[in-house]
Each structure stands twice: as C-alpha cells, then as structure tokens.
Length: 538
Ligand code: SF4
Ligand SMILES: [Zn+2]
Image (cartoon, rainbow, N blue to C red; front, side, top):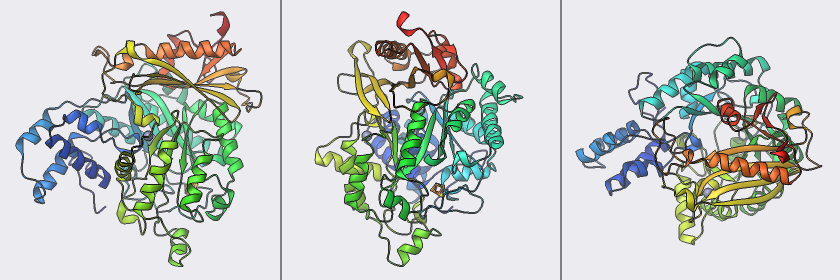
C-alpha cells in the first residue's frame, strides 16, 4: 500500500495507483502547456477501459508536486481543472467488480496466489483493493463505483460491467447467478426476487447494463457454458490464451493446449460472444523471436476482437521466481519489450482493439525485468520515431473529434475465423478514424453447432459500437456520433449482407440494457438473443 494515497472520499479507500499518478503528471504538463483540460484528460485514458482520470486525482497529483517542490504553485492551473466539466467520450462507462477468492484449476508458474485475494491478483492493485474493502460484495462494489463516477461528473446511464477475479467458470453456478443478480440490483437501485426479474427491471433502469464481461480459461468453455453465460446476460468473454505454442504452454504449466484454446474461441464465436484474448510475451522458454512468431499466429484463424498484451512479470511467491533464482529464466529488459511490442503493433489487423500492453501491477511487486507501467506511452514514442502507426481500433476511435456524418465512408472488412466468415463493418472518417462499427459473423458449414435454438441457421451480430459522447437524453450535441443513427445504418447493412448470403434469420447478442434498442428496430425476444426472422423478405 506504499504508493497509495487516500483521496479523502467517503469510503476512505486509497484510489490512486502509480499509473494514475503518472498519467496525472503527463496530463498536468499538457494543461500547463495550454492544452484543453478535457482533451488532455482524454489523451491519457486509464488502463483496462476503466475510464479517465478524475479531477480529484489531477488535483492530488498537483498538490503532491507542489509539496515536493517539483512544481511551482499555480492557482490558475488549479482553477482551470476545477472549472472544466467532465464528460465521458467512449459512450459507455466501465465498472469493474471482483469475485471472491476461489481456487483456480490452473497451476501457471507465473501466477501469484495471495491470501484474501482472488488467484492472480495482488493486494495492492487498485481494483483489488477496492474489492477487498467491500469484502467482494457485488452490490456495494457496483453501487459505490457508480456513486464515485457520478460524483466526478461521468454520466452513468450506460454501464459495461467487467467481472474479474480468477476463472469465472470455475465458480459454482449458484454463486455466479447470485453475483450477477446483485450487480443488476445495484444498477437498478432496488432488490429483485430473481435474476430474470432484475434483468427485466434493468431494461428501463437509470443505469442500463450495455455490456457484461467475464474472464476465464479457454479449456473451461463448453457448449453448456455458452447458454449459461447468456442466461446471465454475458456479451463478452476474456480468455487467457497466453501462447500459441504447446511447448511454451506446457513449460509454464498452463494446463491446456493450443487446440483447446482454439476450440474455446470457436465455441464463443459460434455463440456470438465478443472475444478478448490475453497474450503473454516473455513466458518461460520464449525468446524475442519466438514471441514475434507466436503473435503472428494469433491472426491465422483465432483472430480475436480485442487483445491484452501482458508481458510476463516476475513476482515473488511464484514458481517462476524460483526458476529465476536458479538462473533458469531471464526477463526481457524494458528496452527489449518496447522494441518487441513496437515491432508487432503495426501488424495488428484493423478489426482488433489493443486494450493493454502491460498489466497495471504496482512496480514494487515486480522482482526483475520491466517495472514501467507507462509502457504504452513509450511504445507510442518508438512507433512515431520509426514513422509507423498502429491501425487497431483503439488507435482509430474518433474520441472527442467532431464528425461530419455526411463525410463518413462505410467499409466492409472480410476475414475468416474458426469456421465463420466475419464482416467488420465500419463507418470511417476521411482521415481514417472510426465513428462506429458492427461485427457480423456468418457461420459456415464447419462452424460449431451450439445447440442454441435462437442461433439455428442464423447470421450473428456480435457487436455494435458507436463512438461519441454519451450525453444524458435531452442534451444532444451536433456531431456526437451516438445520436446520428449510425447504429441503425450499420444494422441495416449487416442484415442486407446476411440476407444476400442466404441467411433468413439474424440474431444479436444483446446486453440486457440494449434489448429495447433492438425491439425498436424490428427484433423480437428469442430465448437468449434478440432475433429477426424472414430477412430476405424485409
Ligand atoms: S489460469 Fe489464470 S488464475 Fe488460474 S493459475 Fe493460471 S494465471 Fe492464475
Ligand atoms: Zn493500436
């Protein structure tokens, strides 16, 4: 807890991580140099889709620097920060909750296991600290996070719920249902009798759930699991795939093979889930060259929608630590990592989003190798100096750019993955920024049969994402992409392509809080998906 400071909020829990204070420092420098406060904050998003820096953090960082003599007192700067209202640009606010500690079937040699913590989490990670403070109670975790976000001026009408903490599918069914129901109760501000009732209340609630994300191991995904997760309202699954080399997986005691990982991805895709993969360079047995090759394999067939690059970090109390002490493992240096990730970033396809390039582990826990949590910024600098760019989704999102709807161009990027023909439909600005996109999967004859009735012979819409400011209803703003009907236009195009390819039915993996959106566009409630029939007749 050394590097943490309390923000003096009502809960009294420390909220500032090293990476938050580092980003605050960069932001302050830009504001001082004349950049708009709002833009400066947006330029340095928090890791893991956790939104943006609060004014509180900025002011604390400022005060610390003045106290430590690093910065001169500047009342104007302080005034500027305080006056600027905060708005959220991604359109959706992420709320992260952790499940209670529970044994994971994995034995990965790099994974820490601390008392009172879910496996793989450290007691001084900001999210983990918050969860421990709330004794892993889902209701109070969600409620307090919504309150904190609201206090700093973030709209909280659209919430993506990110459930972390070990391997979700290893928890018992009863706990899973209770946990998710309590999250919905918190978003609804009222207690329902059943999960289904809580979900139905959420369709009209003030804090609508527009995405539900779980994390698990690829070998724990099964056909039964696909339907179970849908009943909970899940829309996106994060899988630790880590490597596509069986030798490396075995050396690191991952306990699953590449084939199992591929099968897990194929199952998720066949059921329309959005797929986020964790990939780890610098595992035991890997080299810089083998990691470059391994990364390339990701795009052959697996083709994730999003990736988190988590370079292996050497932590105490792991088996990898013992190997390092015996000289059997050597972590890459920070410079080697920067070069490696800068090499691979420009090779990432346009349909994928890079969410992370390093895990936000407080550096005092890292025994050797890279300790820098600001790797993303260092990589951007290196990319720029090489004259290269990353074309992933995150690097092309419109963010706070005003867009002219008439100038947008509709693109259809087609690729194949695990038995499906994928269409990444996007609206692009003339300077190649993304105003919105839709993921359409057209299962081929070799796609996995999920056994789910709604998906029988159906094309599947796996994601519709429109960028632009999430403004409370009644405060629409010219140029804000979310309000310009782009989603409807993308849906119509997706339906047209599906019909053209011979599909009569289309199913959307809708979050609970977006069901109404699809009802308004001619979709009906299926058992687990929103469905439109008779496509080629419409
Ligand atoms: S599967 Fe994940 S949580 Fe389980 S031991 Fe491996 S790294 Fe840790
Ligand atoms: Zn990128």
